[in-house]
Image (cartoon, rainbow, N blue to C red; front, top):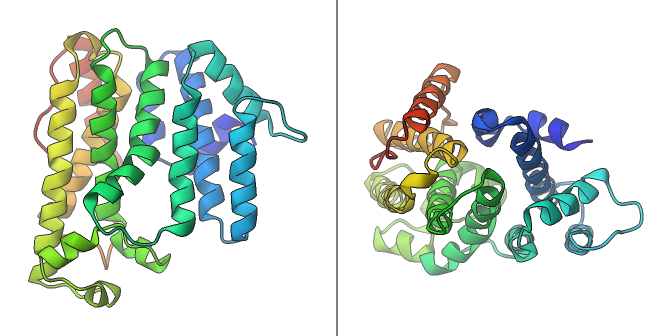
Length: 282
């Protein structure tokens, strides 16, 4: 399966953001996205044993820098990408390390522990992506880090119920304790005031990362970061949707309508063309 097919089948919001890119950069970011998708699918596979997952991820770590027997075409494309943009291999390794955390870690005691995971599976993705998008000001790196944390926290809030089915709780244990909401209540999907307070707290944390990202985006790189800003807009909308609906995440799956996504994409493309500053509120 080639990179374009992997991206198309994923039906991800990320794929929508690529609309703003020229043909060459779009092709290249699709290769990178396909790598992220394949790595994530290995960790989430219900058909592979733990040992098989570890072996496949280790093989991908090797294939980042050297040819392997019977390697998929995607591996060659990824190495070409690394060479073309002088991409830091360590960031690809961070992404692999992030999905490896899902193989052994089911709980996070503190947000600082969770932050490591979010950095690896989201901020590292952003740091590679901006190299492909192209930027002039090194301040863009902090933008990528903050936006990655914002997007991943939004994912965590949205997927609380889904993650429970997989036996994972990403909400920090210290946060549950802070609001008097026990893991047993979470496992039983109890919807009460304590749960609402917890979700509002996590939302404010995500919103803070969105604000930090907006503040860190250099003015001269606004146009280049249009794909990232499209993602930011869609996820801000998703966060606001959950908040307005009082976080009914145990009973429904939240997503923006095609119309709202289209409107947000159009708005960001216009802002990019006019070189307007990013939105600072959710």
